[in-house]
Picture (tube, protein in one colour):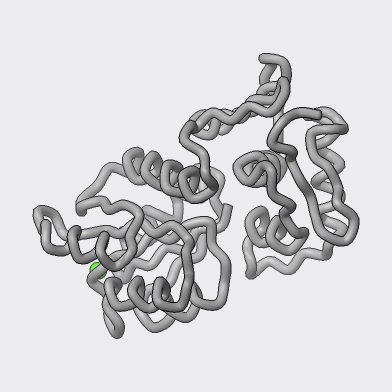
Length: 221
Ligand code: CA
């Protein structure tokens, strides 16, 4: 899952990047408002973590411009501790949730999972389709109650498809969310990965829609 982190404090940005990568996300970090606005306007992210105090354009202005342009990705804003005005302004500008600084990384990850889930239209962190269960918190997939061993790439691919079940996901969208945009990968790589995940989860777990992409059906066939 591809996440944009917008934070000008290098230490916080580095901590966030490390924690998000460890939690299975594909992470891009930018440090100023102009660059953040451009990326969020032209690239697709599963979620954005947005600091409000930024050089150049501030976070609130960035968020307002995204929403005015119809960019609907979930956004978690980082606000100054105790500043209720910042929180109110942020939510009015279209933020999905907020977290006052300083924060615990565990809380940030929980809120991030929650806004990503809600934007995909789901309420629970445990997803079941047929006999396959995805537990996002534990980063674990079970088939018939038995845990399956997946590589980080295989997990990212399966989790992205399960979270967006009922929708056909293109090969490009999958590639961006599994490998990140900066790593160029040929379409073969995704096909090979799909094949490996099917072997572990069952051939029918992921459907191929020729010419369109891949689909985890809402209900097991
Ligand atoms: Ca800042």
